[in-house]
Length: 351
Image 1: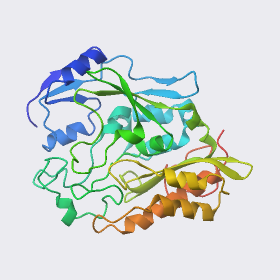
Image 2 (image 1 turned 120 degrees about the vertical axis):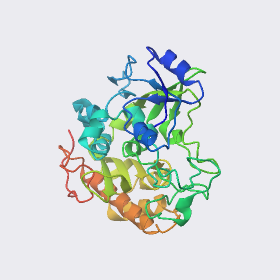
Image 3 (image 1 turned 60 degrees about the horizontal axis):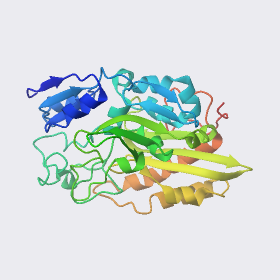
Image 4 (image 1 turned 60 degrees about the vertical axis):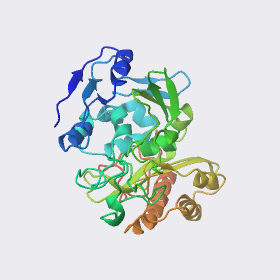
């Protein structure tokens, strides 16, 4: 690990000012950053510690019925918050399916949004990786790529975003609050992460020095609580990153789908919201035919980036499974293995 300066600011404004200096990086739990520093992928010249900043660790119910989640809230604390679990069960299920309990106890909401890809070529400094070293090439294109992107990839990069948490957040219309040298701003989470194009090194809309301070879920998102699920297929069920995943949320009225949300994980460099599939579900009966059509629409633009054509069909099946589980009703109690595709289809309406 290279030598670095350590800065402990007392306010958000001080943190932003310190991080605006080139070569700086923010430090929260460090569950991703410190690993990357140890293997030489990340080499910041100074770390700006966020762990002592006030006001970033609260879960706040908003007057309009939404919720605001501070960027320093721990993943485990958010997933286990009774009010949050009741109103946004798919988000809690996604959080509990990610990493180990020890990591969830440390990892933060803001850090989860900004975690880097787990592509092995990105993490191997001996490999060519345009995301890590712009212009060097992409060894994943001709290498081991069965777990790489099938949507939104480019010749420059075929990596995927690893977050579980972000998938239902995108489906439910979450908004990211940002502080920066130019002042505060807000960005829909659906627009926060960037597809690689010709500049895969730019992973999000954040400018130098900008800091994620909070996430907001709108009141409308809680309207899906009775029919919302997250499903994740992984190679190690106890804890692992998704091969593919899906978040589905439905509002069912008089036996028809009045509103729908669907997003996919493990398929692109960002959580992938399938808005055309959502639109196709509105007005339909919540049945196998409607879910099949929605899954086909969601993956209509998918194409293999290597030896991973199987992921396209797998993603269709996971999307259908998530929609069926959501239609059956959110369980009153999360399963012992949250987000497992082997969970029973039956569900009790979530109270």
